[in-house]
Image (cartoon, rainbow, N blue to C red):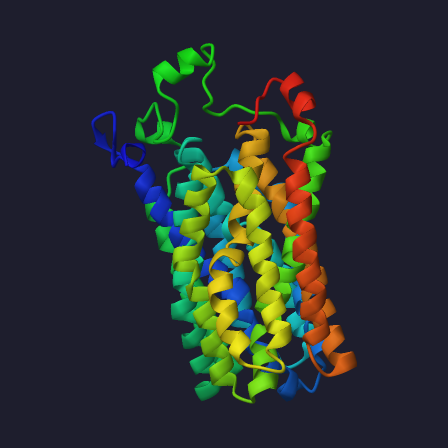
Length: 429
């Protein structure tokens, strides 16, 4: 517990406030964008008279613009104060929700989703990872990031049921208005509390940085803000293995978020039960992301990167089997406790371990790009399989296999390019 002291240099460490801000960005923005969107599939498709494959293209368009935004959003976070970049992103996404509530045709949702994607590229998990990376050292980065990321689990317990209730009682247009209001809560939090760097508050060291004795033992080279550049990382096989692992992870994870409620609504005929199951699974993230972060610090991130995808594989297998037996819908929830933490924790922790935090914001933005590519593919494939077969079972089997592939890719990424990276001046732990 000494590693997680509340004080640094004899006074309260402001990094804990920043950790709370990261938690809130996940609690509010991440859940509204990632977890609540699937609630709109059935009502919008029914009112506008479109297929699920057609409607899911709103996600495709949004994700394409997120991908474009991810190319430069990390550099914006590096160049400008975090609070201003984050505020701008949240304002843009909230305005789009207001306009979506007035949409009368699918093309209007396409247009607004495309605009919204630029905002989402900098308003979900990226600001949380950057805040943690700036304020917490390598010895506790996994634990600190997991605390921030568990905000999505807590938020899912609150917002998924609330937004679904608004849809059932007042319609999807009112629900978009509600999402705009909830999302905007992040604006005053960012403007009033967020501070970019410890030095801005007068702190010379961070919680989790090596002690002077450890620095001396390492030959006098501090591990604070060390590593290789983004340009150097792109030249290594290690980077591309983990990048493709991150992309494939989001193929499955995005399909899970987009189609879970629709799948269990089809299986049970009860949208409220489907939403309750969804919220229950997401609620496990309150504990799950914390466990994954802590275990990454204890048994090493390179091992957790291999183990965690196998739990997610179990989740998808249970979803496939639930079409014949709803008992598996209960089994998938404890599996999701660990597996569900994969997309928002492992890619960013493994990035810090493999390449350091010299250009962590840039590298995290590029890992977001991997996730954005996956988000384009996953929901579209799942919706297409449903339109062709009338069920999601085949899709869940495909994603089960893909999660095993992710485990293999992360395992390989920890083995290759070691000498190449050391020659660049960084020694991965």
